[in-house]
Every structure is written in C-alpha cells, then in structure tokens.
Picture 1 (tube, rainbow, N blue to C red):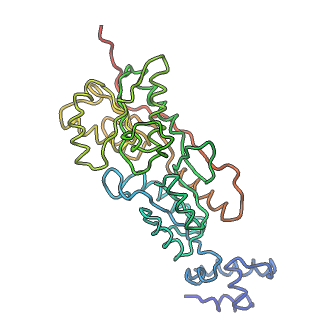
Picture 2 (picture 1 turned 90 degrees about the vertical axis):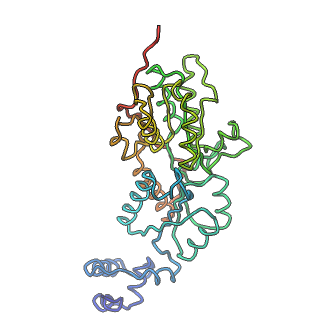
Picture 3 (picture 1 turned 120 degrees about the vertical axis):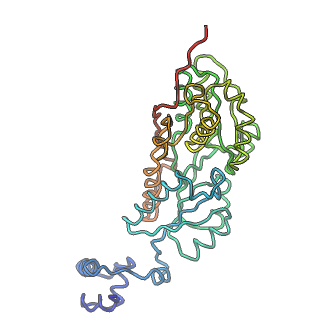
Length: 359
C-alpha cells in the first residue's frame, strides 16, 4: 500500500504539505502544488487513514444517519422497505461525494452523543425524531444536522427539515375514495412513538399517539371527505398497534366495521398490503368487497395483487436532498429555507373499486 511519504516523494514536497492538502489546509500551498498532489493521489488511488483525519480535528468525512425508530410495524426498523430505500439512497450518494455513512441507533440521545463524538462525525441526518426530542439532543451535541419528517407545531422552523406534503397526500386519497363512492371510508394509522406536542395537538390522546405525520394525512383525508358539505367523524380515524399479533386481533374485532365502511385508507403501504392478505385469508375480495389504499408507493405496491393504489413519494430523492443540504451546511453555506416539502402524487392501480349506489 502506498504511503504518505511516497506521495510526498513523487510530488517533490514534504510529507506535511501532502497532509495539509489531504485535510484542506491549503492557504500556504500554491494552487499548482495542490493540483499536482491531488493528481498523484488520484493516480495512485491513495486512501487517507480515517483515524489520522479524526485526530486533526478537521473532520472525518463521516455522516451519521440517526435512526430514531427502534421498531416499525413490530419488526426492527432496518427491515422496513421505506427505511431500506432511504438509507440506501443516502449511502450511495454519500460515497459519490466522498463521505462515509454510519448508522446510529437513536433510541437514546446518550447513544447518539457518544457515537457522534467518538467518531468526530461531520454532521447528522435524523429520522424518527420529534421536535422536542431533537431539541434535547441539540442541547447535548453541537453538530450540523438535517432532519427528515420532523414537523413543528409552531409557525416557523428553526431547524433544517426535509419532508413531504402529507396533508395533500391525505387529501388526494380522500378525494379519490369519495369520488369512487366511498364516503364512509376508514382512515387507519399505526401507532408510533413520535407525537406532536401534546399542548397543541387537537386530536384525542389515542389518535395523537399515531404521530404528527399521520395526523397531517388524516386532516387532508378529512378535508377531502367534507369538501361537498359532508361530515367525517373522528371515529373514522383508527389507530392500530405496532405489534403484529395485536394488530391481527384488532383487525378481527374491526371486521364488521371494515365491511360496513367498504374502503380503508392506510398511512403506509405495509399496513395496506397486510390488510389485503388478511382479507384474502378470510375469503373477502379486494376491491370487490373492500377497497384498500396505501401511502408511500413502496417497492411492493406493484407486486401485490391487486396492485395497490397509493400516494407516491420519492423516498430516494428525499434522502439525497437531506444529504446535499447537510453538506452545503458543512461547507459553510447558510440555508435560508429551513423546511423543504416535496410534492406527492396519487397513483391509481387496482385495489379500489367504484361503489355502486343502492336504489
């Protein structure tokens, strides 16, 4: 393996000069020398030692991906298709830009602080954090950070967040189901540990436990259902458990309500596909007897039969956008826009049937 001294000999400079170029300390090095050293480094595919970079205090080129969820749908969070697609996109893009991605279990702020500090991480991308929880972390750790899907209940953001228009996504689903004749459709969300601030949350406590993202989707769904003067009761907002076995028991208990409603709008594709299988196992046809919709447009939405009608969000682009905004911050750029919200789009497939009016 080629050494730092070998590079210095090839360039006709001192080892210290090569080290300075590697770590970005080029104020006293001519541009000609910088270019010559970089060319030699490239030609010889020199890989800097991470440990030595960390010791300089000039950055490690490591970005921490903080996973605030320990479990999703009752399984380890990394098994979730949404999370896998997001992390994969960030990791691939980070490597292209010369950074390393390290996943941090974020179920406790103490663990995030210890790992990020020990590895001298340049910055963090966080998902699965509430606004309150992030403020606690920020008091303990001085690192640049971009959050994903961490919504504030105040008028303005004071932290960088990348999200989507959840309200509009819920509205599109609600409007579509209403247009298909399903004016009594149920809205179903899985419980989460991420809640809105309790003092401003307008939902009953059992609904609030579904989280602020799902609350926004519900509000959009409700607005669409009421657009023609109708009324969408809070009783149509159903929160189910994270634990799979408990969810199944809930579905069994809900079966008469499900059949009466005739349509279900889920906050995730996973739960929608799970319900399609649940109904199929009981001889109930989708969409002929019960229509089902999801949210996210995950990889499996087109594989399931019937193919799932859902709301598409570009998960990979969301991850890349969060990474690029973080790197711009690390390079000293001030980002005036604190919250970036991507648009979503309804994708109509085969899991919803038009309800015929009974005369």
